[in-house]
Each structure stands twice: as C-alpha cells, then as structure tokens.
Image 1 (cartoon, rainbow, N blue to C red):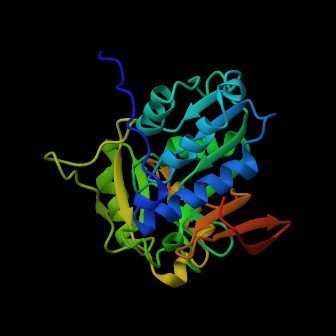
Image 2: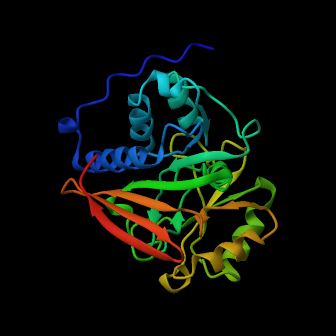
Image 3: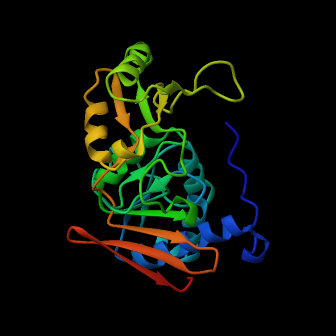
Length: 266
C-alpha cells in the first residue's frame, strides 16, 4: 500500500470562497475554544469543515499533539489524521473521548442535527456518544430553525442490505416518508455502501414531523434492519457557524436552553 502523500499547503483565507472561509472560521473558533492542552483523546468527525478542524489542531504544535490520540469517524478523517502526522487511535482502545468535533448537514434551534450526507453517521454517532463534549462546526447555511429546511435529501438511515426493501416499505406506508429512496452511487452502478458494508436510505419528512426529530428518530430506529439514524438529538453541547461577514455564530446549551451569541473570527 503506498504511503499517504504529503498534503498541499492550505490555501490562504483570502483565496478561499466565501463558503470555505465561513467553514474555516467556524472550525478555528471551535478548536480554539474546545481543544485544550489537557485534552488527550480527541474524536475527529467527517465532512467538508473537518479538514479545517485538523488544520487548526496541527497549528497548536507538535509538542502539544505528541501525547494526544485522535479517533476518526471514517476513511476521510483517518486519512486527515495520518497525513497530518497525528497519532491515530481507535474507539476500541479509547471508549471515552475528551472532545469530538464534527460537521453537520443541518442544525436546528435546539442543537439537534442531521448527519449522514457522507454515509458516516453510524461511526459519527458512536464517537459523539463516547465524548464528554460533542461540538458541531458548519457554515451559516446549516443553521436552521427546523431540520430539513435546506438539506432536502432527507434523514440518512443506514440499513443492512437484506432489509432495505422492508425498511423502505415501512417508511413509505407507516412512518410518513413516501419519497424515501435508496441512495445510489454516482460513479458506480448500484447503491452507496457505507464503511460498514451497509446501504443508505434517504427519507425526507414534513416540517411538522421534523419539529420533533427525537420522536421520528426513535420510531425509525425501532424498525428491524435499521443500523443507525442520521438524527443526532440531545447530544451536542455547542455549535459553531461561520458567517459571511467574518463573524461566528455560537450556540451553546445552558441547561435546557440554547444561548446564541456572535463572536469575532478566530
């Protein structure tokens, strides 16, 4: 197996698009706030914002990172860890994680989120649950009142291949997602296959249903053949959204309330 190639130097922020700048702002601010010297076991999530998370962690220096272990949620984050010369670990070895930072496809008013656009949500949820602190990073487009507002493909559902047709039937006729579909691959014939060898169903639901994502998550999870549901409810302690004006919107759980503030860029 060839050794991973050295990453190209990261583009300066002036060369990034507005969306990429907002992702980088969110990631940098979250890392500065939550990846502290005392944190030794760190979960690295998946998605387009996560490379900036790793970039900022690397910038903390070799001395600080030499005693840390980084746990990936999937192939992308594993490659980022290896290429960045960080110590790679596994949740089998470290079932308790100090902090996990991950992206999101959408985050609602109560810090519930949709994940699984990249078909990694089973491993992402394991690392989120294993973490003492779970933090979300995203750009401003992912900051919504109700899940499903901008992310329209639907709730990602990982299913064992043997059961996908039965689960689809349940979603269509029992749970209120008549347009649920098996996710098909774009560059190969056939369905998308997760890192775990399973299929992915995308199930869009009405706004009324998505106003209570925990209930529909629990109902989907009860279907035999479902491995995991890409709804992360009551899990995140904070979410960071990079904005077009260079500020970062920070939403933080305070008891049962979410406190929102805008802060200057990192």
